Amino acid sequence: MVSEVKASHILVKTQDQAKEIIAQIQGGASFEKIAMEKSTCPSGRRGGDLGWFGRGRMVKAFENAAFLLKKGEMTKEPVKSDFGWHVIKVTDAK
Image (cartoon, rainbow, N blue to C red):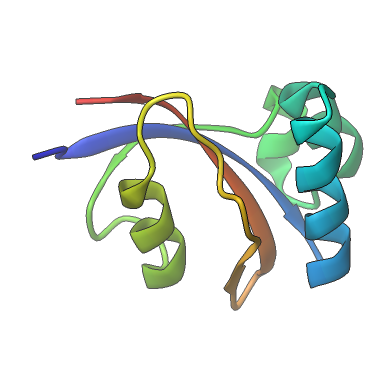
């Protein structure tokens, strides 16, 4: 069982913005570049990189989505939290 994931995310205000970003990335756009341009989270300056985290460290909806993804996968649908809408990509897991 995965105990920690290394993830990146892009945080935006609306579901429509997040869906548009998912479509752009699926079409070949760079996750990191879009994070730097559009994410409202300070992690955007690092291409969305949040580093390693275990269970219980993130808000529940975000954590649940991140731990369902395999290494290299990105959410196909935006994830809503109290902070806004997230596009999440897991870059590693252990």
